Every structure is written in structure tokens, then in C-alpha cells.
Image (cartoon, rainbow, N blue to C red; front, side, top):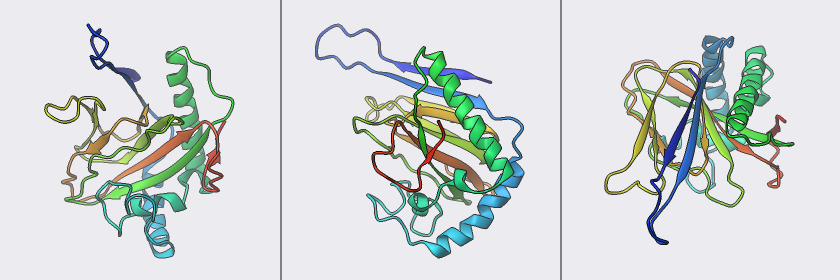
Length: 221
């Protein structure tokens, strides 16, 4: 189910007309036990929330609206890919592989260094990740997420240029094992979660260097 989604403007007719070109890459991760990872995240959720206070950066919960009692609000204090677990190790290899496929599909060079900050989101009935954006600075690279457990929800990407009057939105149907990689300046949000069981995703930011000297980053290339 590999696909490359292109959100591109029509050719502009004058100097001041807007133009844009954004990419979203989607694929399916196989041979990873997501039931195991789901149980692991729910176990770690209690430990992490108890151990750490909500983030002090920007917004308590990364502007997601999940609140100070969520696992998401502790996103800066842990890295899923640093957990010592066989299935997590398999997942890391798949993330690297899919990243490299995405880069090659655009005829770009695979970077010599790549770092990841990786957290988990646990949503319960009635919750929603609201529109938010990860980075817009000159070093902005890629973001991504993997669906671990879901039930009839979508992740929705908003064209950064056209997001007010009649937003241009790409709806990506969530399914277990689906990985999405996108330019980290693309705003995105989810549907309201209506199931009685948890919706669980693993989200991450990718960086070409660790100039922030963050101990939770992990080098994967």
C-alpha cells in the first residue's frame, strides 16, 4: 500500500501568487506485533505519567488538546525507540527502511546522520488531537506516526497555505501498521475518537543533526 501523496499548487501567473509543494508518504509496516506494542505502551503510560510532570515547552500537550494528564504531555521525557524490546527494535528498523524509501522516491540522498525523538499518544473515547504543527524553523525535516491500535479514525493533513476559509485537507484513514511520513511543517489533526477501546499511535520527529543536544534523541542513521 505504498503511496506518495503530493499537495501541489497550480503554476502561478504572477510574482505574488502563492505556490506550494508538500509530500506525504504512506506505507504498511509488516512483521511487527502491534498487539504487544499496544500493551507495552499502556503499561509504560502509567509509569511515565507518574514519573514526569507535563512538558513546559510551548504548550502542556504540544498543542494537541489532550491535556496535562495525557501521555502526550510527557512527550519530551521519553523515547519509545529506546525501550529495550524486541518488537520495538523491529519497528525501528522498519521506520528507517520506510524513511529511506521515501527519500529515494524523491531522488534525494539518504542523510549521513538522522536522529529521532519518538513518543506515544493514547486517546480514549471522546478525545481528539486538535490541529497543531511541529516545526517551521530552517532546520525542519520530517515528522511521522505509526498506527498501533485504531478504530474508524483518520489523521487529517492541512495544506499550510490554504487552511482558513476553505481548507484543503488530505484525510488519511488509520489502520494498524500504517506509517505516514510528512514534512514537519504540515498542520494535522485527528477525528474524534468514538470507540470504547484506546486509540494508540507512535509519533516522531526526525532531525538531520542533534544540535539541541537532547539526550532523548536517538541516532538511527
